[in-house]
Length: 254
Image 1 (tube, one colour):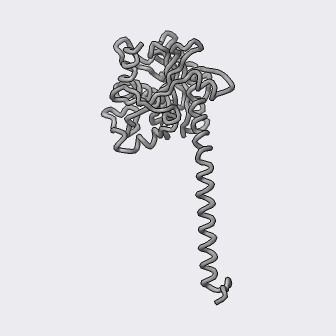
Image 2 (cartoon, rainbow, N blue to C red; image 1 turned 180 degrees about the horizontal axis):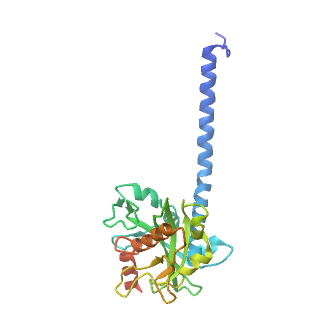
Image 3 (cartoon, rainbow, N blue to C red; image 1 turned 180 degrees about the vertical axis):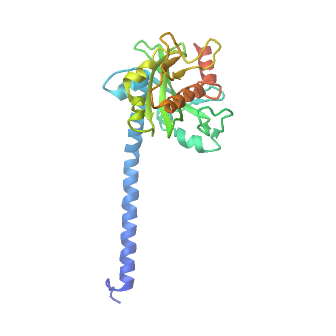
């Protein structure tokens, strides 16, 4: 029997074949682009780490390979997993944070993140002579409208801030632009996170930090809650449920 493409059956068969072809094309395209998307995510991560650590240069990959040692750290034990650089760069911290098998509910959720992944990527930065220059750690916490993500680098004393960069936020455009203003993020440099008792006391000070305040940076008028959220994120992530155990382990290795 000859196939009649203008019949009802012919229309259904044609539609089915067209749908299958489109599905194969979309699936194939997604697979082809998958590695490109991963490469882009790795490059963005490398750039943020280098910016936080104040490492300048044009060739991000070369600088990262030469100066950065990535670690995937268990936040409870402070120990690092034995993984390749690529495996660490591809670690999906956000998926880990929403998976109950790979995360916990913080006992004191100062940063209002609801769940904290058991592992976090940490980056040890070396200077040109191979000595430890800084350690970069990701932080995130609830601002006014969104979760603010960033990276904080500390000097080898594991207390003094080397630099900071915000990688992502959804705060009010215009009002929260200061988060990506280098003039403001530079004010973090030289500030200390911990007090003499080892308690994280870094502050974003409403009304402006005093000139001799070694822990405080100025808040921005109209964006106080965003700044307060960032302050709480720093205090949480450098506290006992964040990097404090890892930093203690690192001090004993020095």
